[in-house]
Amino acid sequence: MHELSIVTGVVEICEQHAGARRVLAVNLVIGALSGVVPEALEFCFEAATKDTLLEGAKLGIERVAATGFCAACGKVSVIEGFIDPCPRCGGFPLEMRSGAEMRVKDLEVE
Ligand SMILES: [Zn+2]
Image (cartoon, rainbow, N blue to C red; front, side, top):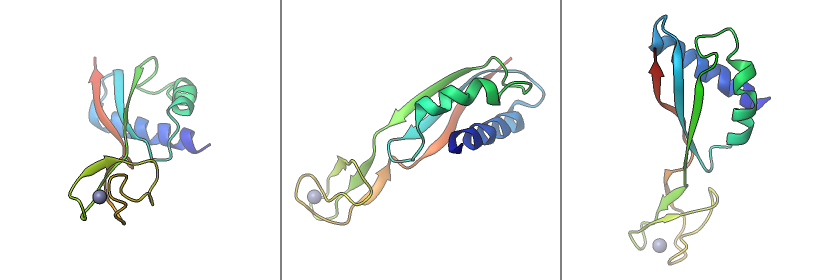
């Protein structure tokens, strides 16, 4: 139940920022290599937010592609895995620029 603990964490973050106000919507940013399955989050969101300030809130998920910077050719490319070489020149290793994140982007309160 990896995703359930993530939703519990999201609820805690939102409650800290919302004060005592009800949360109407929360938007998350999920990187392609974050290990988080958006569908699984959506699946347990309703149950995990019951009896919290987020009950009934709309869940928005923004997916971010994984990208890495190649020092050899100076380009940032979309990658499929942490240990992928540069798709342009084969350079390795790449410096990860995005894709591992899972964060609360913003939330809408009453
Ligand atoms: Zn390269």
